[in-house]
Image (cartoon, rainbow, N blue to C red; front, side, top):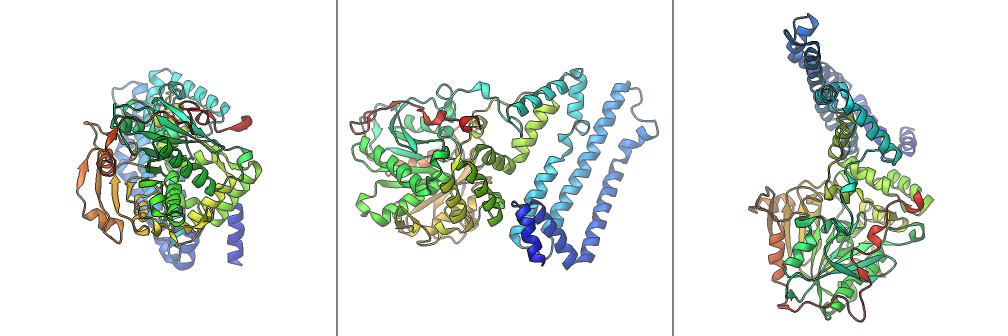
Length: 567
């Protein structure tokens, strides 16, 4: 009966927000009721201690002795400051207690515990004192300084956001950027287009270029130009300046007509076709192939497919690189919170209506993963302070979302995340062939990011164990985006660890034997690639007779927005 009740709860709560939190409470009640009473008494004691610590701040106001010699406004500000301090202390006490209460709940499985911790953290972040006017002394101070104008501007900002459908609030000043002008502006041409992607070839920036070109297989959850941001942040510009011919995939934003597009299509008509076109334009050369996030997952699948179906001499890739990519999904990090049978069924139900997963849903998931910086910090700045969102090329890209076709998305969530079939030998078939990552023989350069909450670095490290090829693994500081878009700079405080994989059983063992390096891992990647690049020659022409130039970059597909037909 209890299992039936739980299944009903999951139906009504597919992401198991209330279900996981209730399971934690039930775990205490059923397995250690005395411990539950002790935990509750402990919480009361912590609140009492926090109040005593702050008593001196409040006693003067309670007994009329506080703020001597100050104006009424000064006394009020001091009171608000003290009140905010008390609220922060109480909130901190409850946050710490809740984490301990959840982590220590008896009789609760690990997945439920992690899910409960995630949702408890997100709920408690939403009620942080800084998010509310009277418990944010800075907002009150701004109110007095502007004679109330800050709060009026904040209300106007909120109403404007709601009119534009920005439920979570804007996180970037979108007026500061134009695609093709100050973003995605490195000179290039579209040299191929099909129903799924455009391939962009960039103009050479040096008199001679390496004979082996680079092909970036980009993720299709966002737009391609994360590798072509402003000025020195452009990965593409960095590589062309260092003598490489660079190609990049720009994916079409799916609509209802593309509901049946499969993961296989992204592999064969996307990644493989991009590699073939680039190789033909460069005189029949093999290429350096590099994939980011899901683009790396499809590249890894393509490499396994090619090594299974083609003779080694005909595999069109000389070496391959993965940036923040999972191929073994047993450690999906916080994104795993959304990977359960009820959750995937709910997502599939959403897709059945339109034939795709909507941009708003995808964006909401990623903003929840980084809610403190992507939701609440913006809310405070825009609404309580009456400010403007920041001008950030990276945030602009992050906000320029796409849709996902139904068939591909369902396969990806079920077969890779939920069932982890890509990590199994012949666990799935793509393009008519069983996929075994152990078949891959071409050298691999794999990058993980230390603070990545989308593709945790320990999860990315697992690829080393699945392949049978030489692997150089690199761990970079920062997160999923900033760890990869990581240009060299004399002022950079970033760091990385690099070294060949030598059969270590786990990521921590590998890391313990590596030295810390200051700066960007881009320079290490350049050195690794140069060892596998043929001598420099005159740059190839833009396009070829077989694949003529179709137009200037950034092309057409990148300009398609995330809301088709106004809906």
